[in-house]
View (cartoon, rainbow, N blue to C red):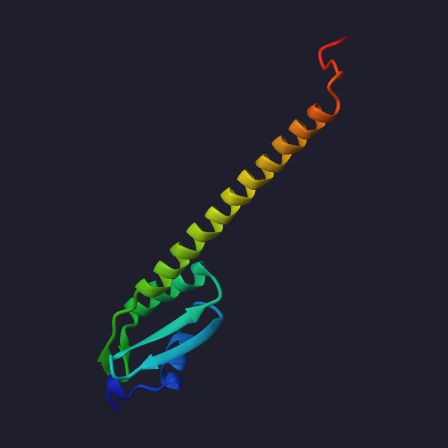
Length: 116
């Protein structure tokens, strides 16, 4: 069986035997000649990459193990989106507080804040 005929089960067994951690998902794209193995944590994935490149024979063929560029791009995009949502929320909250202060000062014109 060649690497192009590798099944999800073959890939799962190979990475499970490395003992890097809990595998969450395994996908094989035979037409492109590669597969994806997703781990629970980044630390487990990093260990799987290190171990996978030192035990790089799968069904008698050499494989190369690395981070998925697509996953890293999506993760970076989601991190940026989360940051932007936080910034927008902080700006809206600041505007709300400022408008409340303006309304308060308008409704209470005789208030002397500096009288001690």
